[in-house]
Length: 454
Ligand code: BGC
Image 1 (cartoon, protein in one colour):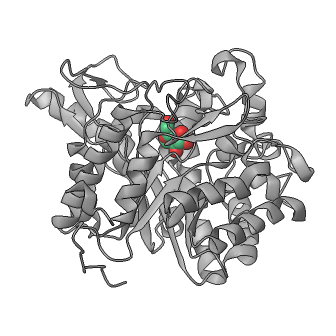
Image 2 (cartoon, rainbow, N blue to C red; image 1 turned 135 degrees about the vertical axis):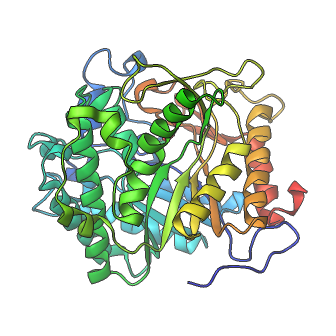
């Protein structure tokens, strides 16, 4: 694929996509409507004590019923792309077998609505909402999941590939495994260091199988989304450097290395010790499929100090006393985005990259004053990170687009509705949407193709 090189005044290539991202369970609401099957999040939210304030995705932003209004909002902002995910259980209520035409119909209408508004859909097939029926059969721990996922993916490709040109297999497999199987903070809530590498491996096999199915069915582009968090040693000591390398392998290379290079990073054996299995070499043929792009989600960095008692990586995060932290306690560090994008360029041969998520939770004012809802910290965050994207492009990274996380305030997983990432405020009592200053800022960025950042 030829690199987009023609830069305009803003420093972003022609054809650069300006997007916003969401995911199904976080915004749709009506999780069981029209014959949908329950997901692991439906169950997780109903287990007392797992989600802050007992919040659930039952209503969320009611996007399932208000998608037309939301697409109109996107058009008003000038978005040229919108990244959303498909709820597997709406399409296949049992996870496999019978297709639920009504569930698929929702995404069919959403795609048409987006195209009618001149917005390119970027579709994620899996953003954490595994059908509960599959979890009962072992979920990501069952080797068959790779084929269940590929069959589901093929069903969706057949329906939408004529109109959807950019596909994403998985969102952040690291979080699925670390949060869902190792630390238990996310569905399905397991805490088992023997399970985590198995879940990771089957996620990677599922990714490979879904890409293979795409090559058989699809005509456009497909990629994988990972969350990357650059790791820096707290001191130059050998111990801190080794701990940093482990942390980097665990979070940043555990998925990209197998998917793009065909093997796990060497450090994975140290990270999981006896819980790290010997994988059959043939699996890597399935996992390593040619990809059309990589999606990078970037929020923060971490500074690592060696700590022998820490697990799974022998490192702890060092707090930076002079830095700004977001409401989710993530350090604001835009230089990390430049470093990350240049690292991807160097390590993986400059693949086309979309920044598929970037954003911040801040404590916004609860209501608009004189019609304005000011969120200056988010504006500053977005400005600095968009500058970072431009700097990486100027240094030769092949960056094709950017999606802010998130279009709307939404259900922030185990933190419920307590954290707001949206550039559009949602009043959960009335479902009223109000643009924040960050949305107005982003609209200007898009209208000037980045020139207003200069
Ligand atoms: C996820 C989103 C989440 C965001 C903020 C990403 O890891 O893909 O679903 O809301 O981070 O935590």
